Length: 193
Image 1 (tube, helix red, strand yellow):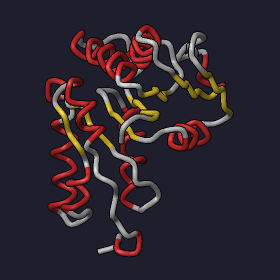
Image 2 (cartoon, rainbow, N blue to C red; image 1 turned 45 degrees about the vertical axis):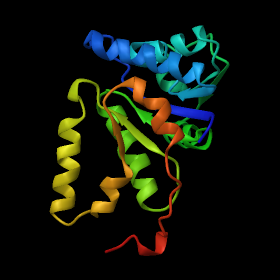
Image 3 (cartoon, one colour; image 1 turned 180 degrees about the vertical axis):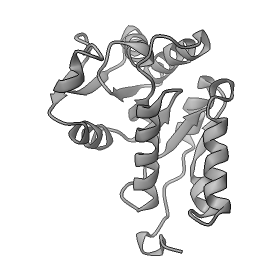
């Protein structure tokens, strides 16, 4: 893919390692500099806010999507290109998928894992064909990758499912990974083993 909107899933916590904050800043900046818009959860806190702020500072477009019931908790970002306040988490997640051409997963917590597994499962079921890229800053996602390998080893997923994931070690690897992402060839009728 050459350009488009990239959905960035990441944490809303402020109490994380500076390496993760730096990666969030670099992500926003590098996506904007490569002509890619950012779609994210609409918050102004944690890594989410850092991604948005740095994308905006680099001249990028940022679309935030946040449910009304958590707009106060995640402090809805008021300076975005677009801010959509929706009714439910399901509406938020669907709108983020619909507005995005690829997905980048930075370090995050349970919410980020929920978003990752949902988008990965939707791909597995043939509901989308968009690239999914895990940014494994300082090995943050190593345990998740081990879990996925265990799921495959136990027969609950296919090896080709793991092959679909693009894992990069640094934010600098993102533009190349996005530009070289292959189109999906998965036939939804062959999903079940």
